[in-house]
Length: 141
Image (cartoon, rainbow, N blue to C red):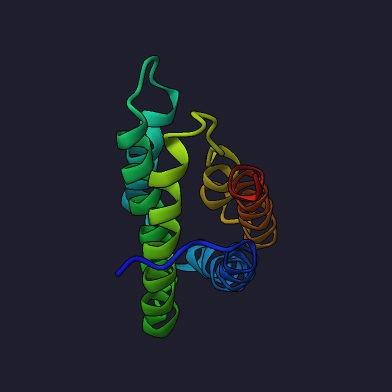
């Protein structure tokens, strides 16, 4: 049985996601190695490819956010975020059939590279707010 998606569900999941991921991005600045940053760059490189398939971008998005949660080195944050990302992943898959717009990750990656925790948290928050707003536009009507 698949439950319908409500506007309230979207609002709540993105509020929760914002709490987890902003904290996770800040912590990842402390723990991410150069190799970790390189892997994050590799994951989101698909966003800049001409004619990239949306399915590849959606998969890269999931992997990017899960990797940052892992880099935060907090198992509970990681586990809760992966659970949350599974729901968001469902929204992403459904939304790409309606709209090919995408919210990129460049500002998050730039802050992680600089190890700027405040900017990483802020960039993650803006990213999630933009993604939420996109979903609300698509699922409201």
